[in-house]
Length: 208
Image (cartoon, rainbow, N blue to C red; front, side):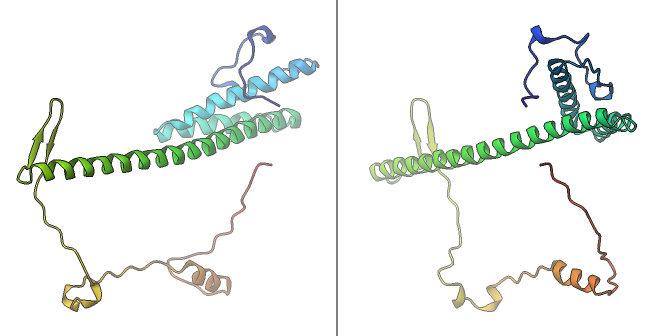
């Protein structure tokens, strides 16, 4: 059921296209299977347009978009068929967005690997170039070319050959703490009261 693709102009049998506030409108049922498909497609498109408003960094605009969607669903409280249609259209948009997110994560990983490869080859070429130039001119600290310049600067760095051989005075001690959530959970389940922690019950949902 490809409800996320654009609607062909030749199939536009409804009076007007949906606006960003489309989810708030009621479904028009003509009885035609083709018409019902068009309406479901338009509803999904309208909810997708509403979802685009969630990309904003403005919390008020995000809250307004979510409130508009919630109002559209609550408006069909007494109409199970219309509520199911809007809920189903929302699920289509959610699945589309999650699929798109997974694809972009894969592409980001692929591009990250390509970037590391490019950087590694660039570093290897730079090291080779510097090696050759400094072999030819050991005293040089700068090289000028027609379009580029290769410069250097002195720096100092400490190299630890054997950390175990260092006296304690040369060792920095770092101490970090974090809540032991597993132990806290078991204690709370056993009825203990722990200041600063509480056990919350949540229900997770997933679209099938």
